[in-house]
Length: 334
Ligand SMILES: [Zn+2]
Image (cartoon, rainbow, N blue to C red; front, top):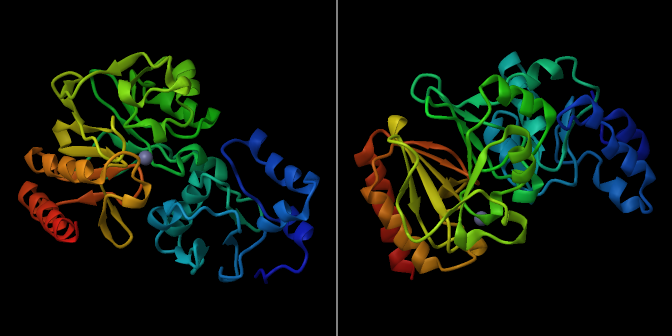
């Protein structure tokens, strides 16, 4: 059992956060020791809101919600950050907690001792989302702080695999993705969630796709720039739908075989219900709502967002009932 620490350096020394590969597992702790101020190190200690035990969250948490939806049995929101409210009590919970630890964009989740099974957990990425109804669709994990912890996905398809938005680059994930056949495309929903796109392009040789309105100096080399208002096709099974609002060039990807819409930051289920995250809007809230209306005409039953919770509807009618209820509420507020 681990009590709240009284010694910052002691606690950092005996805690463990695994960033993606063994070579990269220690620099953060070393950096903390070498920090010119005590402030940095003091942020990396156990928050008092964690229950005692092996797993804990430190004060560097950015409240991105990733651990809370990846391992909801163990992580919750306490104050304006995450915390462990219950330690994993079975193998399934432990697996999900370690997957969350590896996916945390700020390396804010730790264990008291190096996990004996971390190498096995690394092999579980990318993670199947639903092996019954979403065969070939995976959550990449390894979220990046460059995209504030946005989720990225892999679609495995005969016409060439597609990465949807960019995970944090790690050699381990690269090797795992190569075992799936790599990726032909990296589809980027918008400029916020491009993260390590250049490294992935270099290592996997995938062609990046981004709307031209989203391109800046960091994405000038993107291979395919979408122009106009679409829609665009990537073969018979994938349609790219322009959904301006969050940003001017936000685009969603509709994967027709499994009726999945990858929404980026356009629309998602948040912790408190459906949201277009107005506070993070960078272009136009009314246009974003108009783009939510466009979704009524699309044939999908799943939403896989960048930020927020994945959602499975009963059917397309159920989807449209939810969207109409959301739009009705929003229109009354406008
Ligand atoms: Zn965004």
